Image (cartoon, rainbow, N blue to C red):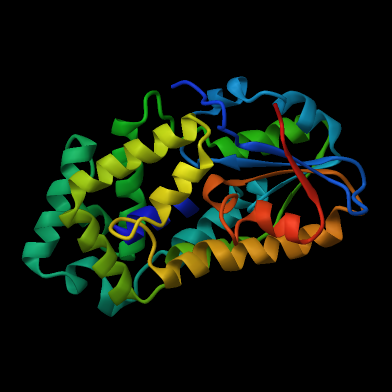
Length: 292
């Protein structure tokens, strides 16, 4: 379950009165108003139409910043590098890591969610994390209405910015992101994948609840789900996936904001909480205002 949550986090209905995913950042010597928006990496791009002030915000800034710069991530060279690093060592292919019973259990779940089109044998040379990611996508294709894995919200926002003449940048390198996806020891990746298979129904419920929380623009609910003691991130994974990265991004923003105004789009789970991007920006002296 933990790896499944990491997969959709690296790889997240009416709007309540307190719901918010777009915030203005101002003051403290910033060059104009900047903005921070929480995204769900698997949400339909149509949600942009329901975000009050989105167009004015992105058109008013100098640059768009994401977790990574997506044109680089989607380049053929990067895709080739990612596939190479997703390959398991010769002595740690899936058929060697898992017992026959475990292999068959994973295979059955893949077939279930792919209509028989995906089998574990197809992924045998790959690391277990790749299977976890593919399983997350397959489940979300069933859970999220009109989910299209070829239309990624973060990428779409960066494309809107580029089309409007803004520069696009990322807080992290492609190599860092690839390491987040495939850098854990094979034994941990295998254990996480097996846990996901054992908790298949809970995975579906988690995906459904996370999607609805995001579509309601309720980032506090998103955070509650991600740190839930039964389903959410372990403390060490929370530090790795959220806290440490938030601190790094805000450190960069403290240098960037005096020079140019920016539109930041990062996973919604990074925004709330004591160590969230919004509170870290407040602590750095910036004024954070919901965009209504």
